[in-house]
Image (cartoon, rainbow, N blue to C red):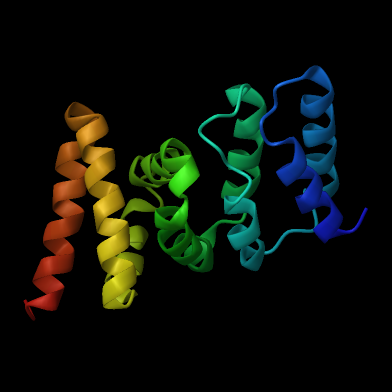
Length: 156
């Protein structure tokens, strides 16, 4: 299967409601594993759905996306995840994992700073949802990120 066929297979089986779907989904993930680029995150973000029935299998996609790493990866996550309307929980999960990463948290602040105004507002709204979903764990980090963005915008 080529890359597009694999992504289409992921899309077709993303509900993960049967054992067969899980097997096909995991097979497509394995086939894609060494053939992905950051540009594929747009298509892969469409695979997530909050109505999936097997979260453990779907986490394989999270791990595969996270393997891309780097600034381009962070930029794609910041731009793509607010658009994941039918996968809001997964969008928050991808962002929570970045916020919890000592390696990527500071880089993510710089990434969000560099976005255009519309993209910045979209990701900040999603990060507000992350904060509200688990304030004890994420309130301080999200507020710090927002403060850093505002300070940069105000020229401080």
